[in-house]
Image (tube, rainbow, N blue to C red):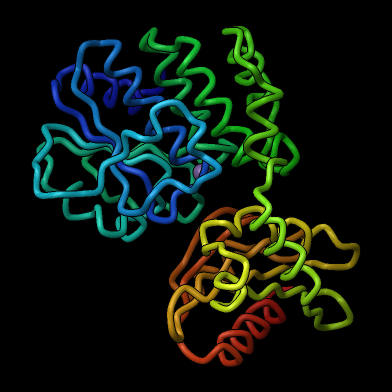
Length: 317
Ligand SMILES: [Mn+2]
């Protein structure tokens, strides 16, 4: 096992009460990492709780243990582990709870990672944080069928089901090992990537049909307004993955999804092809992520936000 991962393993073995923290607006990777860690630590007889400042999106409730998530509170845990969090702000409302723990560690794979824990382990070439959690738990001898199903879900979520350029031979090797535990891989892929509720289908068709293109089709912009969510009975957590339909269009080099989170407050997702770096664009607005997928939050009037994003994309293409 890598040196710092070994240190994290030692920290976890030495603690009886561990809290595992997800990032805010949790995705499949961070949820899978937290649930698999908690399950594995309980196999060792420890008390382990997954913590997130947001509810788990409906599509990930199939992951075993998803109903066990706790909101951050005043309880001080002996050890804290953040999974898939690029910096302290990504913990959102759980940041204070994380910092209160005596021993603190972080495992992450974001290119924009800023260290915030006592033991900080980041591998930017992992397609999913779940790949690194696999190395840790495999090294500790704690992978069982339940852990394997969770980690497979995390990898499938963040690698776009092995389609994104972040996917490596190692990603496939880990997936092969996980399938060896007898998990239902096809069902996990279906639940993470294909299954839609009727309201989410309505949101998707509505927003894709309003997609705006700029610069001769090099930039695509999806907009999710409060009205779109209200009239389809959905929420910003239901938008995951829809931006893929925009970046996949021939000629599109940069795709943005701008989602109205509150009055004059927007959650922005960014996807790019080879000619621009998504993390670089997101960093210009205080966000971060990976080379081809990143995000940030922006405040102001919608048209001003769009102008800033278009300029940032043009400057970097
Ligand atoms: Mn991730």
